Amino acid sequence: MSCIRSADPAENRTEGIKLKNPFVKKHSLKVSLSETRSRGSVKRTAKFDDKEIWWDISGDESILPPRLTVRDIAATGLVFFAMHHGKHLHVEGPVSASLLENLEDLVVSWVNRRPDLYQRINISAAKEVRTLDEPSSPVIGNQAVAAFSGGLDASFTAWRHVSGKVGRRNKKIDCGCPDPWFRYTNRRTSGI
Image (cartoon, rainbow, N blue to C red; front, side, top):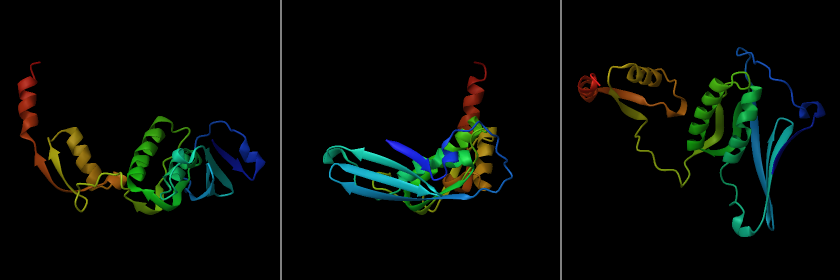
């Protein structure tokens, strides 16, 4: 079970949809996460501004989550709140790098789908970590080689990476390899 509460009772009501001004400077929502454990129970509390959100988890010790090492739950629990209020989200503590990469995509997706509800925000952490269950990256030094057909998709991909518009997934494209297979396939199937 999770809940959000505010020290200001006026903020505990729901409001109508408002369009946000994209030119207003965004402030950061700084989140700290703590954990208290007792026999058969774990409570995790995320504090931000004058609010808090908490998760009470109870049950047999064998099904309780392990001790808190990364603060991923704070980032996932507050990303929509931060987008709705137009505040960048900063988690004080370690967050898995793969989650931060995926949350960037989630933010872009929801802002495009519902610009009346959400604003584009940045999500950061005091420390980005690779967890044991994440596969190691085959990328060395953030470099990449791009297959280049000469079409719109290949051009757009190259432009996004060169101009730094991909966020954490941005790669330094060292070269583009022309792909003659595209031309051969297109000529062969053009009559279909």
